[in-house]
Length: 212
Image 1 (cartoon, one colour):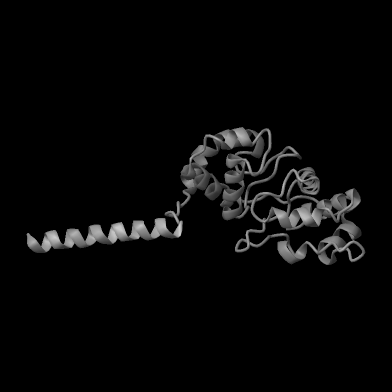
Image 2: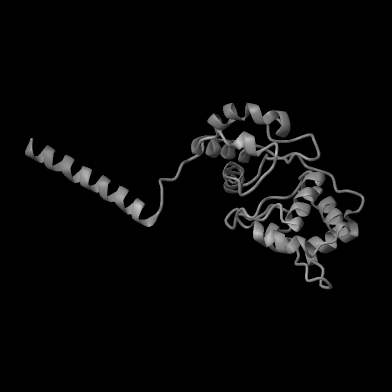
């Protein structure tokens, strides 16, 4: 009985120490997303983003295949208000931390349907995406989003390939105007967008849509 009591005390002290350490360092236990649970919770998202995350409307983004970490960050940004969108902010507000993690996990596991490059994509869009624009100091998109537009999960740079043209164009406009840019690495995109003309934006978004 004494040995058992001692073991319980050690376990309790260890747990308390772990909690104290987490509090002292400002960290919280990581919530792991459950894709199956996310699928059930995604029913309300289907009206805009499609049941598998492949939206049909040009202004609504495809969520399928997007990096889980990035998806979670954006949902959280909508919830706390660092990213504002009339249709998304109210949807994110009631979500719990677990809800957001589950939804991000679900959409990340879905397969994105390929898009089609627009008429203005070649050669201007390709040139900007791969080489930037030296005359205005515009950096190449490939540096962060990769040659196929797959992005960089570790750096939390989103996947762009196959994305809706109108949606991407609107995001660039929002970055340039300052509507976006407070969430995550958005400040980087805000600086980049200010160096783009409307023609640059249209050409590069047309090109991105055809990447796969």
